[in-house]
Image (cartoon, rainbow, N blue to C red; front, side, top):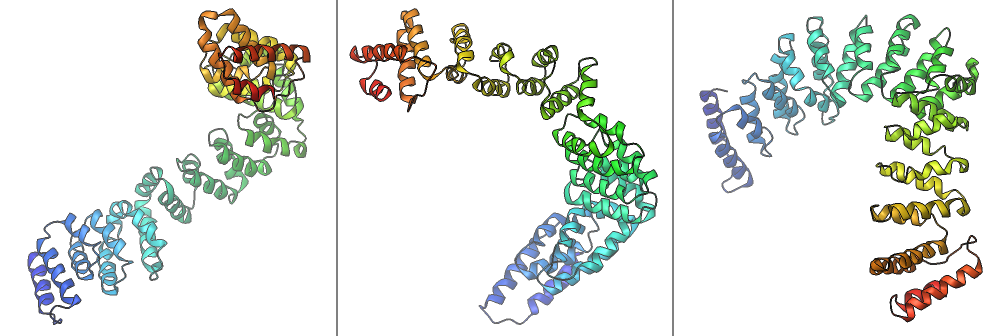
Length: 453
């Protein structure tokens, strides 16, 4: 918008008759002051969002002459302005951009275009159709496709839908969409593949099956199985997939296509041990779901894996017969594996756990973080916990203050002790020891009283 045009507009605005001191005069004077100080495109873009309609109107007039992507974005936003005159000016201002020569400007303003589709102040269907017609032009297909590959969210979905509408040979588009960074685009691409003939859809879905996220791969597998002449090889493969969701669908579909999931697992266990994390997770996951116990050598190898997720999965398949191996995982650097180990050990009888847990605490108490040693201590039956602390107090009198603090903490944590593993005679001895500590003032009497009450 050149200087003379602004001057003419300012002149008309000044000549407008409004009552002196009125609200209209205040708004007009505000507009005159702001517009007179505007000098560049950035200022006009800022003023196009001003709450004063006079200001927005002249800003839109100025932006109509800018011919930049930033100006186009501001004009698209003004298409939904609450002032009809501003909307009409913006509508006229975007017309020069609706050609293939300005497709990059349209792509730069695509977020505003997508947002406009959700606006309901007036009907924007005609404008959106014009924009889509430009983006779908054959001469700009490559530019739009390349831009689509970099998009996320609503703009990615918008471009995918527009490109798919006019693509007569969509194989390349769908292959890219199935590998797109945007999850919802990948899901939409799977649905689009289902509309294709099987000969075209199967290669695309087979290529996407091992690469996409689990949520997408479930959809891919569900779409792929009915299209295959022989789905058994695919089912045997995905039954050992690392994803629980994929395995669940595969186990549900396996009987329909004559595949025995247990036989697939047995055949895998007859082969070599996995080396990759995904392979380990597949074997461990299917074994857990079928409640099949893995060979001891496999289970021990999984516990020694360098992948925390593999060790975590292996812990969940532990039984009482191999509890001794679980105590070796109490020093695992992964807090998740440690917590799972505690849960599994907590399921075992106290007769199995008490001795091993006490021996582990003897070796690791001082270097073990406090939350971990407390979790291991809680594996002991109730009275055996304080029995262990009293035994350490006797064995390390030079650390008396620390062990007395632990005993006090144990007393404070008790509410109702249920411990069938400790005989009444042994319990009476422990109570007498606690009362002796209270009598000498080493432990507060009220703490002991709440335990033996």
